[in-house]
Length: 99
Image (cartoon, rainbow, N blue to C red; front, side, top):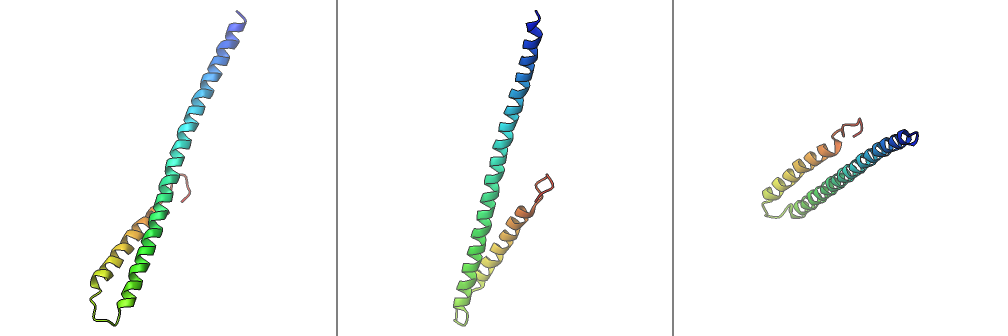
């Protein structure tokens, strides 16, 4: 009989540790998802920056020629708006006091 209470205590501790481990795995998985999303946002921001620069260079190359670049100018403005939105996502607080 003296062994049973110790066994029950061990089982209780073991169960609690298993729950902690399961919660830790869930948190680690969620962190991996957040990290992947942040990486994707960063890549999108870099792509937008590169696209805007390429279009602006093309506009500069065409300047002085009898070419209407208004569509390209509008495309640059649209990319800059999209980049501002992505930049805002990157700067958004994470909820834990860090950005």
